[in-house]
Length: 328
Image (cartoon, rainbow, N blue to C red):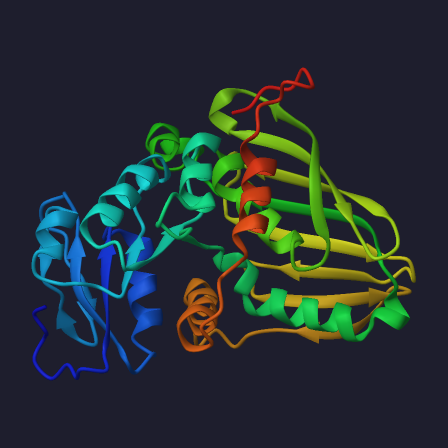
């Protein structure tokens, strides 16, 4: 395998497939891990570039072209959601020993999800980049809810709103992400998974015209004492991004996470009793991926168990055969 100048034998090599905006965040987060070297990028769009530790990364037009030069330890896939399954299969064929991390969701249909997450013959399940579950305010809130359980009690209501201003670019957003529910619903579910056990999707319905891409999902969740229903609202019919999760507990305390501001607080009897914030020195999204890569590459732990990852995707994508609601 070819090595960049100065790379040691201990280096773990990475190829990044898809060199859009999200890929730049992955690259910045990976720079912090000393024994990681991003050796190649793959993109079919002419003129794309990628930088890693202030050096330009060699670019290739296909997975096969890149893997004839490098045998990566990790392949990161940041292409549009509908392409994930086909690209994962290309990676499996070209470098079967590589760990694969694919952007969330793993795919836009359950058949591809099961192929990627169940593992086939000697293929291990892929890892999914549930970056929102690793955001600083979520980690803070989950730790607080665990350590303060005796005072706060279990959750009794949960609501989450995840929205992006994509209505004016609806066609391109639809090609990349499918819908607001497919793109953001998985973020909301991964955050829920930090606090409760999501078990069943009770309903999913579309609100307003197609260009809004607005959806209301209701998810039944287990807590340590009882079940609770979580309400998730996703939309592209907004003027600015918004991402908020609110959890109310039996004590009356309300835990609020503002995912866009990277902030959180607890309200008790109308008073803020706990607060968490960020000084913004690390960009919001980069802070998510730093924590995710520390978990996966430094601690050596799976991002999420394959069984739980399959469950979240089933809640996201299963057909509404039991109800009159329609999938996006």
